[in-house]
Image (cartoon, rainbow, N blue to C red; front, side, top):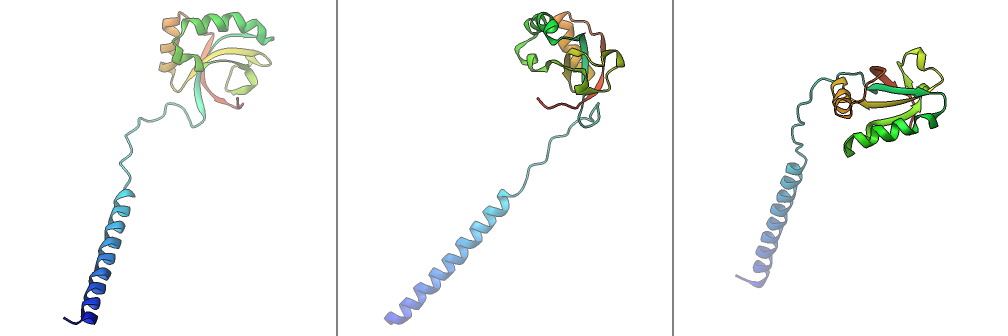
Length: 138
């Protein structure tokens, strides 16, 4: 084989190597784009944007809810503390009118069962419980 024939053979193999490499990269890229099947979820128990809220107390002055708030937080597990709120009643659509213009101390979660599961061990009793839509952003 002459030197020029050898160079053509090497270039031919090199070109083939590039083609094989590009095919391999394309196959790997295609495989990485396959998304796993999403897990099955249960049907929501509230409409989008709604949560269940148990109102445990209310006051015209939010400072009046400090002691009940501290007592409730102390009786709940650490993971439940983020579900305790003291908010103006105007932050929730769907509350009874008796809370209009007041601050409410409440416990919220996605389902009524989850709310009651937090309240029962704490020995807390709600004044009202129901599905509400939060209209305020913290």
